[in-house]
Length: 276
Image 1: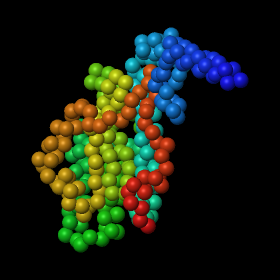
Image 2: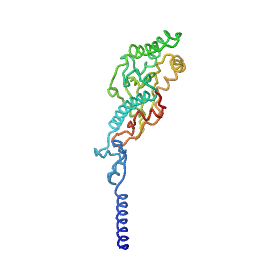
Image 3: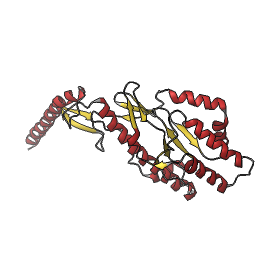
Image 4: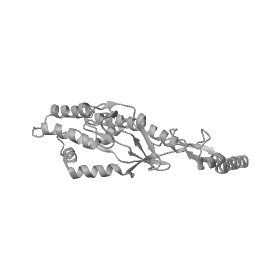
């Protein structure tokens, strides 16, 4: 009986070893960021096609314009979900007073604000509002009123689908918009994004240039950025350059982006130090 069990065990072990060898010989793993696990198991022939640049699900190599457009559309959607979850996380961590007073989302600016005059106009609007409250002791109602005038009356922000203005430049390897877009992402500042907020790097994208617009009128760092002429000139110079600042995520051959937004806001709140 022992001999029989030993022979049976060896036979099973041998079969498993053969399966492992066959798998190693004929099966490969490739990135597939459309799945929760982030990869797909394919045959060696499909693996070789993937290495040539094929999107296996469509059996073709995507043109660069189509490829990056898919990536950017995904990124903009996921970035918005990410910012909405971060807003919830701040509420969980610090209480309802931290909830953004501006709806988290993408906005377009007034029609007369373009890629050439966006900073000058923004600063001039800020200066006019700041001069009216600069000598007044902090009052939240005045701060909120000035913020609303800046955003809604001066910059005339209105909700938009940024894809309408998407601009992909394969010569400069950047993506952005053909007009300034405003991303409201918290209660005291937002982001003005131009024609180069995303750097294209073959199978990866990275953050390019963006401008953080502080609309807390009593915040000294915000005032300095807006009112200092040297900082203004420096910002203009930086806004013209396209270089990667921080990786966003990898991309598979079908234009799927590895950018995870599956986390729970409560978990982020714990890392922030949940209060009440």
